[in-house]
Length: 122
Image (cartoon, rainbow, N blue to C red; front, top):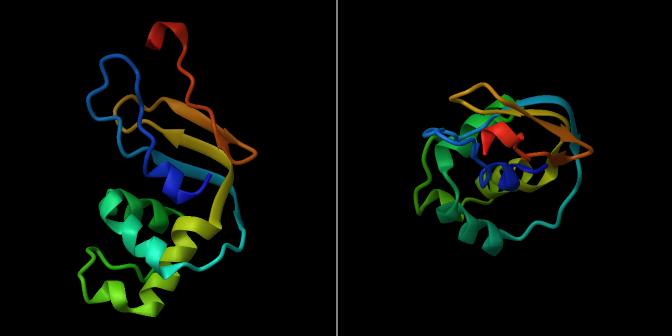
C-alpha cells in the first residue's frame, strides 16, 4: 500500500465520526522504484490531505517534507523528488491501519489493506 492510497482511506464503522486519517503500523516496508513525473506530482498535491500525508510519511521515517506546500516549493525539484519517494515508492507490505476513534485494526497483507467491516460494524 502506497501513501497515495492511504490518504484516501478512512474507517467507515457505523457511528464513527473521525475515522481519518488512519494510523499506519508498518511491520514491513519496501521501496519500489517508480517513474518520476513532476507534473503528476504537482497535480496530486491539492488532492491530498497534506497533514495526514506528512504524519504518515514521518511514521515511515521520511523526513524533510514541509508542513505546508507553497507555490514556490512546488517548483523545487529536490522537494518533488522527496514527495515522489514518499507518495509513490514506499510500499507498506505488512502491518495494520488503525482507526483513530475506535482503535480498530485493519490488516495490510502483501501490500493490500483489508478494510472489510464485521457484520456488527455496518
